[in-house]
Amino acid sequence: MQHFIHQANHYGKQSQPFFFLIDFEQQKPLISPLEEAIQQGILFNILGKTNITEQKDFSTDIHFEKYPIPLSDYQQGFEVVQKEIQKGNSYLLNLTSPTEISGNFSLEQIFYQSSAPYKLWLKNQFVCFSPECFINIQDNKIFTYPMKGTINAALPNAEQQLLNDEKELREHYTIVDLMRNDLAMVASNIQVTKFRYVDRIATQKGEILQTSSEICGELDEHWQQNIGNILATLLPAGSISGAPKEKTVQIIQQAERQPRGYYTGIFGLFDSENLQSAVAIRFISQTGEKYYFHSGGGITIQSRLEDEYQELLEKVYFPIEETK
Image 1 (cartoon, helix red, strand yellow):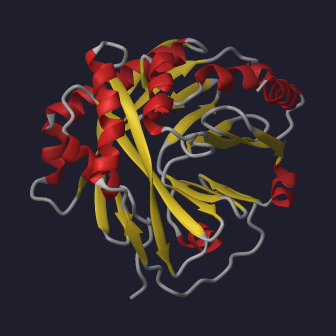
Image 2 (image 1 turned 60 degrees about the vertical axis):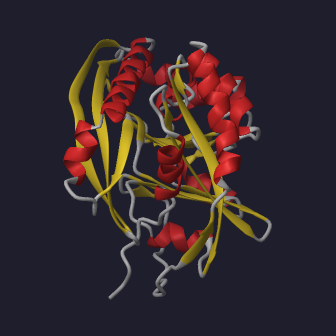
C-alpha cells in the first residue's frame, strides 16, 4: 500500500487524473492514469464518467441459476461471529459468502447490460455493479453514504417493514456512527445530512428496497496532495467490515476462511479536482470456467441465522430489466 499511497499523492499534486482499485486485504492495489486503464483490461462507468469508447449491443436476456452454499456451511461462520459478538469483540460484522452461479452470460456482457451508478469490469477476473458510494469529494467536501438494510419490495408494506425493523435500525445507527468517526480522521465539521432514506433498486427478479444515510465533512483546501493517505486511512469500508473495525476484520478472516480479494474493496477515479469512488459490492468473480456471486449482510447480537442466510441469497441478483 505504501507505493499506492505515494503514487496517488504524486498524481494528486500534479492534478493528474487517475483510476484506482484496492482489494479488501490491501495486498494488490491498482492505480493508473485514466487513459491507461483500458490497456490493463479495465472498463469503468462511475456516475457516468467512463472509459468506454464504443457501446456493445447485447440483445439477449440474461438468465442464471444459483447454487447456494448449504445453510449448515453458512451456519459455521455465523456461529463464529455470534460467539465473538457475545464476548464483546464486535457489535456489528458483515459476513459474506460466494454463491456459485451459471447461465447464458459473460462478465463483459453483464458490465454493459447492468444498471448501476458504479460499474467495473476487470477482464477474466470480475464484474461489479455497485449501488454503494465509498467516498465522494467535491468542492473540498467529503461525502459518504453507508447502505444498511435490504428488503424485497414486493412484500406487503415493504418500506414500513424495513424502516420499523429494530435490528435493521440498530445496525444502521451503528454504521452511521462508525462512518462519522472514520470521516473525522480526515475531515472536520462532520454532519449527518440525511438519515436512513430509502432507495429502490430494479433487478431482473423484481425490485428491492435499501436504506442509506448521507454524511458530510470538510477537507483542507489542498487535500489532493494527500489523496493516497485519505483513502488508506478510511480503509476498509465500514459498511462491509463492521465495528470496531480492526478487531472485526480479524473475526471476518476467521469466519470466512478465505480472502475476499477485490470483493468489498473500493474503486474510483480522480478527475484532477474531485474524487468519486464505490464499495465493490454486487460482485461476480470468475475462477476458471466457474462464476461466483459474492454477497453478505450485517450480523448483530439480534441476528437470526435463517434471516441472514435468506438476505445473503436475496442479494444474488442482476440489476437488469429484461427486454420485452
